[in-house]
Length: 75
Image (cartoon, rainbow, N blue to C red; front, top):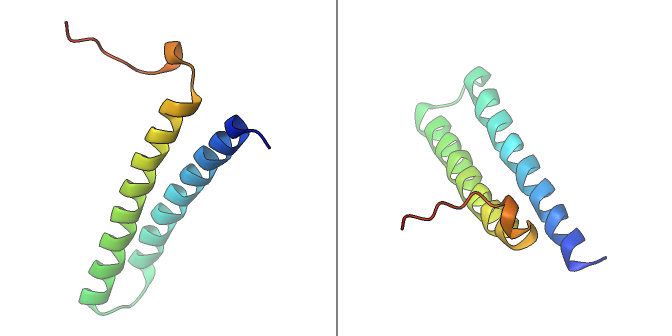
């Protein structure tokens, strides 16, 4: 497997994990948990999703061609 294939695989896994975090949060709404536990799980899922998407952004900047990156030159 090439490095580019590994990068694309990492992007897919990142998107899948982010969707799983959203599903977990949606499932928490229907659970009958103590408030502290529900907040803990929801925040953990949100932070995990945020970290995962940041890492996916790093991978995409390595894998994607330069002309496909969303780059804004301020000068």
